[in-house]
Amino acid sequence: MQIIPASPQALKEAVSTLKRGGIVAHATETCYGFACDLTNLEAVEKLFALKKRPADQPVSALFPSVEEAKKYVKWTDEAEELAGRYLPGPLTLILPMRSDAPMVLFPTVPKSQVPSPKSSLGIRISSYPFAADLAKRFDKPLSTTSANLHGQRNPYSVEEIASQFRNEKMQPDIIIDSGELPENPPSTVINLTQRGDRMIRRGSVKEG
Image 1 (spheres, rainbow, N blue to C red):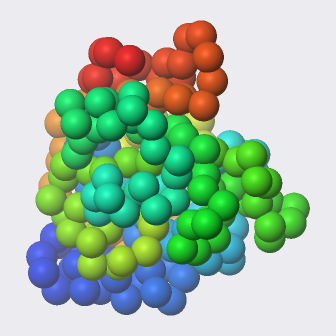
Image 2 (image 1 turned 180 degrees about the vertical axis):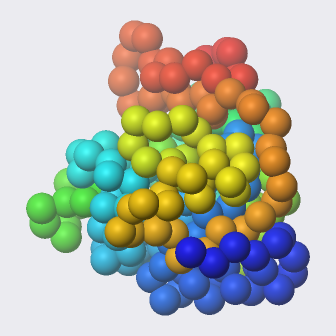
Image 3 (image 1 turned 30 degrees about the horizontal axis):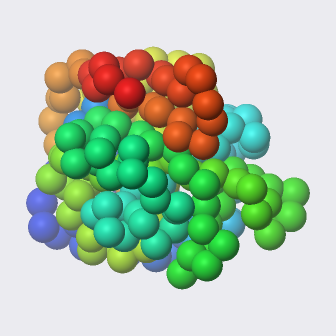
């Protein structure tokens, strides 16, 4: 487990690690999160194994902009309204995936490498500078999920990540140290693919 202070050089190291199929821990506007290449099935499998996350619990995708996200999901008027009010920021919108997306994404660990045509995707556009720069520089969708073992506390410092993974066989490849973060709530998650109560998780964004 390599720990690197946040800097322009650290950004380059993070991008290089992601291109090799590695896992990068970095700060976001909520907590520290794990990034991997969502177009790389082996990287996604590694992420799920690292976190001990159930294979059927999808991770969201980090994009540098709403415009990029629209290439992968079927956008709606409601999504446009919410995005205009809260993005970039701590909001995850779940929308149907497009069949004509530029690349196949793996938000879960599927039995088949061909995702279901009815599958959906949670999208994030981060307001945290390093996360935003990473998404822009990598130029492919990244995972965005908290940098913790499944079921354990969300980490707000590098020390918390190191403590959780110290005795684990699998560890993140690098951690980008942006210091201790304020203990902000997780992102609000709104599922725009279903009717009725669509608030999956209530975070700092209260409407929807």
